[in-house]
Length: 382
Length: 132
Image (cartoon, rainbow over all chains, first blue to last red):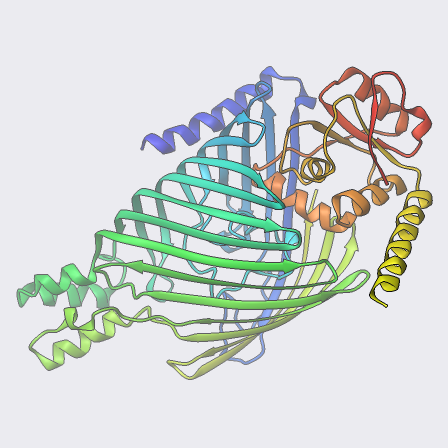
């Protein structure tokens, strides 16, 4: 509550400053992506696309306004309209930034939660080589938090270290089982990430944790409700506690590396997410990517996979075999073991715009299904 | 043999250096002394120790400066700055129209740094920090 108040304060400050300051003191900028995609098989579904050509899932527009309130204090908001959300306008970022020193600053407000190497730029497709970030790894169903972030740059020898420490909470409707949405809340979220840059090489580590993670599962899916009611009736409260994500401890750890000498690049990321005592399995995710740039175009390929694991399955043990089968099904409902391979080609069509083509093949090892998605996008900044 | 090779490499390297210096006549200018690594950090948005200014994107001097001293191409830097701008990590550097505008800015800003194509314009309190 306190943090969402801060977000509104910063938004209000921007509105106020826009009237108080001359027009040219507000820096306007923006970015966008117009993407189209369709799967090749009539029953294939991937990343929100099916066999009909669709412009919505990957398209977005964003406008950013920044106003300097003093030499050191500024306020920034980023308004975004996503095709996946019927182009409804939403505030993606809204924060006050205070420059502490030449190399340190603090942000307060609604911010991006920097789980991954490319989290910060997730929506700015223009800034990375993929058409979309690898979904094997970039799969946490929320992007933002409200709170504070402290950033620091340090130079040690030929290394540049960029460190960010965050604290806050997250409250959002996230998509869960079968595309249904559920209320999720992470409180007392703290963590950090550090990137070390040495010439063309960037290495990154990240760690975040919360001691109070909640996902409200009741009331969104009839089968889940029926199961929970049944477990209550037989007095298996312990099993409900193990399935429920309620006041549970969650941890996220990630490592990433990218070498880019501009002629060619190669990189990889590995992440692990755990939500203890809940139905969410331990999520292990990885990808490796490489590509080569030519004069005005680039070619790249990425291989990624998810490898989830139900931790301590014995905690779901019930005496009744029939009930056990249903409980097991619930405990495995979001387990994925999918391999993704994709190739892409990009063309610089203007100094600030890239045309990208991508073909991604997803191979679900658990259901033995495979889906192929072809997409094209124009991504730009202004 | 090793010695000859070393001499050859040194001569070749020196030749390349003088070639790149003579190909352009650009200089980095500021009132404040600063080392060459800091120039790259300022133009990569990693350090705010001095306030950098740019020439327009289509300027050949800017291209030469970015490749020689920042170590990146224009396209690469454009992507890099897009990241910084939309994540609040740095504010884009101001772009001035030509050498004269840069010199004028630097004369009135002791904490400023810039680059120009013509060394002869450097005068008064301004110092040449690097050449490219």
